[in-house]
Length: 164
Image (tube, rainbow, N blue to C red; front, side):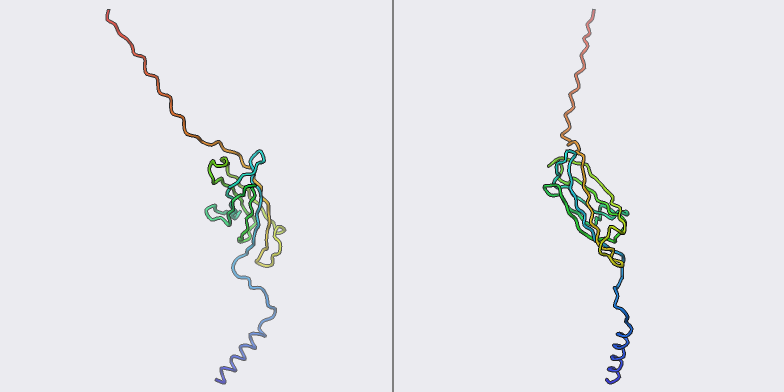
């Protein structure tokens, strides 16, 4: 019992004296947070509602596994927040998901290159936060209607033969 108390005191003393400055534990991988916002309009400047906006890693991000997803509001605005490994690029893509309800629009993609100056408030492996704007002007695609019925082929003219 007495020996246990002595060992515990020694470990406690060694533990406190073995630590110099209390520093930040930096385990894992670098990380950062992002805030991407913008507006989606058509070529005439009219806002487009219900456009899916996807934020992906700009260094080979897969749209099937986005970092974050948002939808434009009635004024065409979106704001997306999230986190990722803090690479040097983010890709933002749009997709029309409501069909022809408010028009059909082509998809758009923009890659935003980032520098260290874009990150604010970081230290060590925490690169901080980056805030960027990505506005899109989407081309309207023609809405495919029902295919017209083919015109009936004219009946061949019958030839008349007469015996003489």
